[in-house]
Length: 248
Image (cartoon, rainbow, N blue to C red; front, side):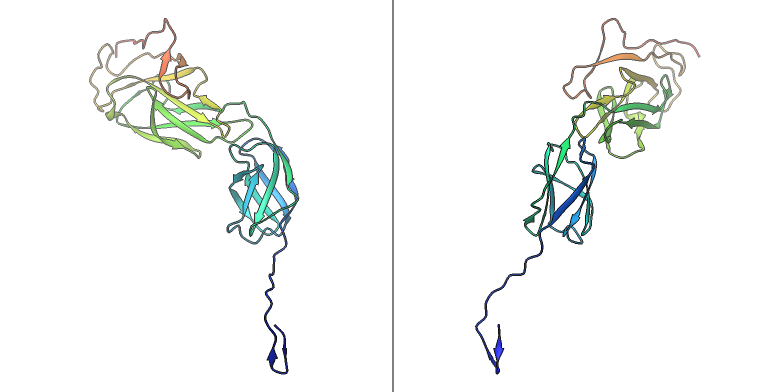
């Protein structure tokens, strides 16, 4: 609107548009699902707000955002293609290419407590370590006799409490299973499960066939008859359910 001699002209609409976001570089330019990627560029805005980042069309969740830099992990389901930043409905027109690498390596999981062959009672702590040489560990799940015990643990240390009084006395099989962002699954001690004796009621009375809280246990090879590899644990032919050495 222009005003001359106190008389204003008719108003004409004028839209002010922010400059489009632009990507200068990606670091790294290739990686596995879950890899942290730094996007350097301009006009991203001081905060994310409703702005988005997509890897070849798959939305990602940024962990850091500023006007010139975005840090984001490669999302599950992403495929090789352009990374695009959209700010205020305007997409970067110079999307940078990112190569999503295949991950076929499963996490390595080790139970650290209780010890194999242990006799336990009352409430105990289950603890495991999990590592993956080429990607993050998404979660660790403990199982007792093939049944999930407790929630999935997404951060280390991987540890939960277990009230053994909820279980009957006898030998139980403890397994820790882990999964990475690609879906590769690993189980504790490679092909062996841990077996240990519960005197679940906290008493020190003898368990049938076993001397007073003393037993000899054997790690046994495990096979899975479940699609997800975590449940319905079976055993190879010729291996008994447990072997005990009686006596105190």
